[in-house]
Length: 129
Image (cartoon, rainbow, N blue to C red; front, side, top):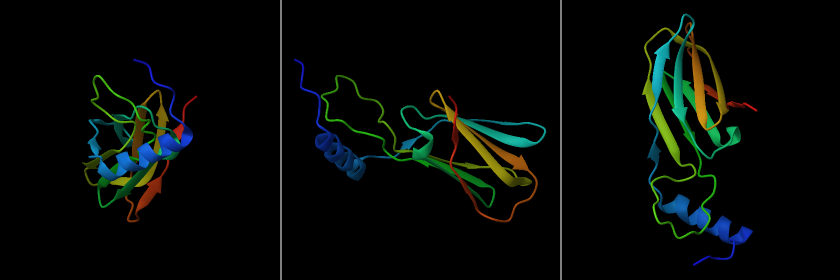
């Protein structure tokens, strides 16, 4: 049984309802150290760089992405949503001079540069074409 495509208003309403009731999706990460940074890589499918916020403070890296869209559908299998991602990662001391990030092909890569930093840092990733 096929259904007519959802209208813009139906998508907006479904997204608002989904956000109000959804459970945040914990994102798996890979973390490794290079000569000048700690690198955190995470899958974030179906979001854009503008949807993602990254914060670093007190040796803790936190990133999240808002729900992108929740078109009304009748799923046969539904194991993830288009956003609502969040993760916090404790990092060793000695990092936080700056934070750089990019998002491309559904993968978020964050570099927390070696060197002290006392301030809270908040960044948006750049997009990879």
